[in-house]
Amino acid sequence: MAEKKNPFEAATTSRGTRTPAPAPAGKTTEEPKPRPKPKKRGTTARRTDPVRMTIDLDPPSYSQMRRVLLDVADAADRPTLTAAAMWRAALEELAEDPRLVARVAKRITAVQEER
Image 1 (cartoon, rainbow, N blue to C red):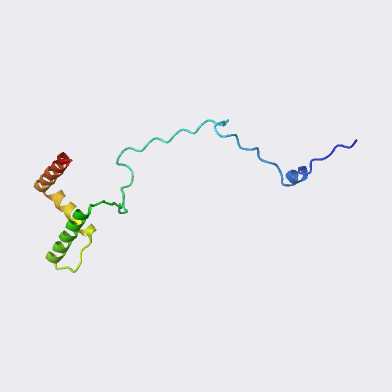
Image 2: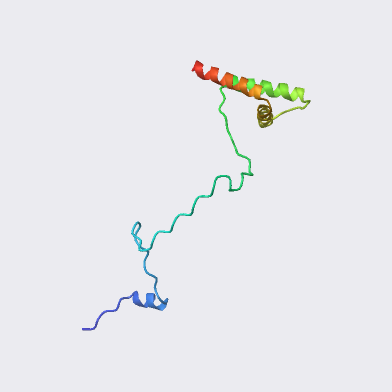
């Protein structure tokens, strides 16, 4: 009796040598690659793109922010002012005035104690 040939044998041999199947997950025969050493703090590139930040305001706080924006825009002789421009200016003022930082910290502490 003649031996039957595998119908797929021609397809596999005509392509050349076959590569072995990958090892099952978790069962590798290779040595694991060593992890790269972490870079020292401060040696990596500094962030250059802006960082998006959001804030949730309750309706009274949002109304207060809008009123302040209108007042600041009026004082700066501008028709409009973005909230981002106001927050950036407020951050710069905080960075330059330690007494303002102390007042803000005192207010934050008082608000947290109320809760």
